[in-house]
Image (cartoon, rainbow, N blue to C red; front, side, top):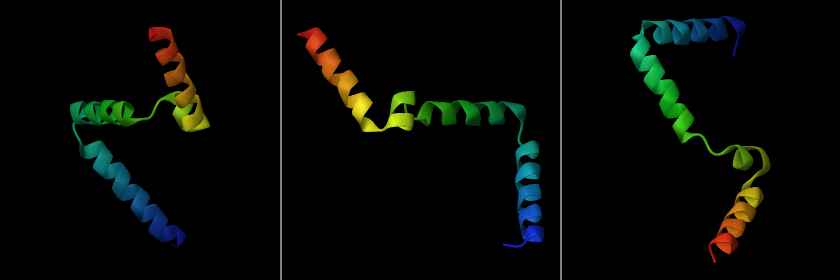
Length: 61
């Protein structure tokens, strides 16, 4: 991809973003945050999540 193509693409993306109403942009940001995985899973994988789940099960027994 040449630099000119990249600049054209970025310009189009920015213009599309700015054309959206502010409320739609906020909704999109909130939806993206909700879909995000928990911090431990994102940074360290499934192992910490599995340990937390095991700890909760033992606590409930």
